[in-house]
Length: 182
Image (cartoon, rainbow, N blue to C red; front, side, top):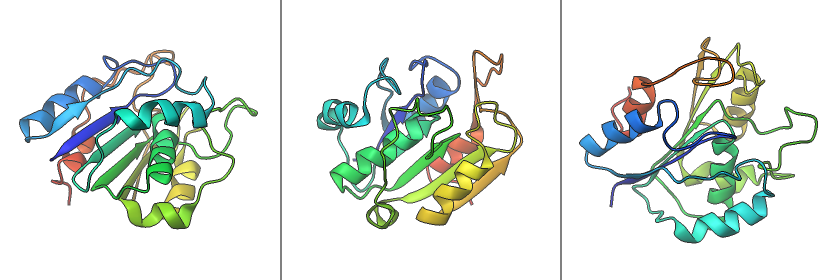
């Protein structure tokens, strides 16, 4: 079954930024899409979050996972624990090392990059000017470990209420998610 799950970042909700628009585009393409509300994102230890959320997910080889900011490393933890191969993982403005002096509970101490690499076709989308330091160096780190496709923009955090960066649509993410990106 073609399904997708969009994971928001810290302090966000399913109704923020481009999440509803991408959800709608994917539903038009025949996907069943969920955007779970995770108010404890990047506040609760990652092992606890994964143990609570993973049993609620329907992961299969046609699944697409999309994560924004803290949602990106959360996806890696979900995949590493489940070991489930999926179609695509889109990691938007993701980070994989500490960016806030040790205050990133969503990060694992270590990732099993070799285990993760074959579990998905990875797409990392990062900016050179991300105000939260979820920048191109973070995208390059994931790309170097996972392979896939690295897309570098100069477009901030791809949506941030605190930085007054509205991002109501995201055609690039929708195209990649439905498999129409070339």
